Amino acid sequence: MGQGSSTEADASPGENAAVKITPALGEKIALDYQNQELNKAWKGVQVSILERRNRREQAMSAALAEQRRANEEQKQIMAARHQRLDDSIHDLNQEFSARLAEIESGTSVLTDDLFDLAQKKQTLPCLGPRAHWLDCHKKYAIDSRPCDAYLETLEKCVTEAIVKNVS
Image (cartoon, rainbow, N blue to C red):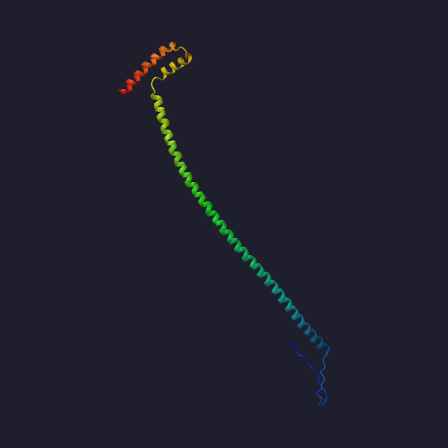
């Protein structure tokens, strides 16, 4: 289009002026027309390509927005789950601490009882005579007369222990 066409006309007065186009110029005009049509077709192709691309981008954008929303929901669910787990851990730690205190208290009481028992065991008087008399009594369960000497020794020991404790 931007090309000017040269026309040759007979400038005779009174004659019909006919436009004569040279073959080269005719080819140029035909090519120019074809180029215009190709450009129109190409622009149509470009527009359809861009429209398809825009639709794909919109679809991808919508999918990404949906994925983002789903991820946000999942994040909230996980945050709630983690909070419940943290609360459970805290409760279990408190329960563990309470039970540990109970165990330590019980251990302390048992240690004191064992210490007291050990002290009492050491201070139990007449263990030897008691053991001898029990052995003899088991041996002679029906007639315990052979154990009378052990019994007298035990009685004497117990009497001495009572006198010691009273004084």
